[in-house]
Image (cartoon, rainbow, N blue to C red; front, side, top):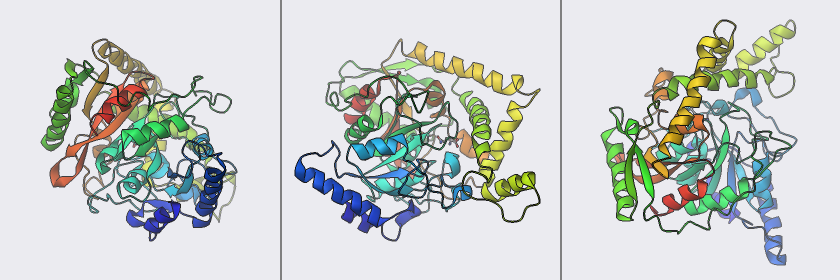
Length: 448
Ligand code: GLN
């Protein structure tokens, strides 16, 4: 199986991969063959998977899509990578992404954009654009992604695949290069909810010795309830997700999926998430603040790139970071340092934290009336390359429907709902209460 996928990956279609090493992959595949033969196989033995380049790996380079980590090799595997290996999965390589997972279109990768396989003139979404494109194009049967503010759900929607971001803390962040630690969460991206359930089970689990925010609870058999009836399921429809900004083609596809649910016996319940719009300024204060702190480790001393000609230590830091980071990363470091600085902290960062709490409370109010929440993943289908190139705020605004669940730490997923303008895929977003991944996957499975 691995040989067949390696052949498809040849020539790196859509620029989806950043590192491929067929010898490593084939050695893992041979070890899997041996385990399958002698009866010691893991639950996913021999099934290929590719990892977003934000997960560190011993056997492949890890760059997080940044020049500053060009050629970097980690001495260890991220917990998620290691857990999938333990389950028997064979690593196909590392997938392109926005630099340090900052972006919504994969246009911020230092190694070039990824094309959307449905229309190569369009973006695949981001930041897990390589993961979504690889699965959509059949270059990998499954991939890992990370979601800080939508980076699993939005590219899954743009590329017509299925992806789930679990409850914050379900999957270990150990070895996942940090962007905004209070939001970062790993999850699977695959062709169906059924596949996602298998992958999620293998990926998740307590890792408290190495990630203090990892939940001290066992992983779950998310497949067990996939086929349970959804009759009587109360699906909350937040009115704020269906306002003016939503493109009519996306709305039509989402409405079609909701009608399907009604036919299956689910009930649509109108709800309100009144602070939806505030999630954009709140997220774009908190995430850069945490990023400015997390990215201070890239100083030219410990990892990756170091500038050549410098006069002293400070000059070395400055030149290394000026050369190594791309524009979007620099923009966020500056924003983050600003909102955390003396005199501005109370006005921006503290205020954002308070509203974040209210956004989480709004969800708990909504969950009194419904079991899951449904709506669009993004306001439009995948846009064309360059459309927002000189307007980073346009990309930020397009995150409006994914940011609320991220800020609240809730599980969310994208499941294909149909097609919109230009025959581009549209995803339906399902948001569940804490630890209700099985319920989301069950609801998603009924659409497939
Ligand atoms: N688009 C958002 C950002 O640029 C989310 C990215 C993500 O989830 N990693 O920050």
